[in-house]
Amino acid sequence: MASFIFTEKHLDDEFFKLDAMIEEAAIATPGFLGKESWIAADQSKRNSVYYWTDKDALDQFARHPLHLKAKRQYEKWYGGFHVVISQVTKSYGDSQFDHVTPNSRPGRHR
Image (tube, rainbow, N blue to C red; front, top):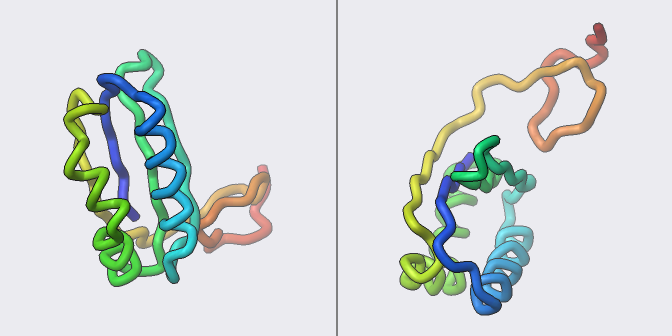
């Protein structure tokens, strides 16, 4: 799992075009499971969470030319960023909605 946390500076048309192409590249990468995006309650930070089957899949995406292009230009669009790479060791819930990570306790309801 890769969490990309950032503050906005100036998101222009170039950013949105490149961001859409990067998302397409992520989806096309073998091992991509899904993406979720969050905005902090105070609107100060955004978080895009990408889920992968394993670190090799994430590494393959990290080397994609569009991703590398965006990384070279990040200061135009972001006030700052922080990346967290982590491994999901357990995932569960009450099964009331689907999630890209498997529910290790299926059928549990309130």
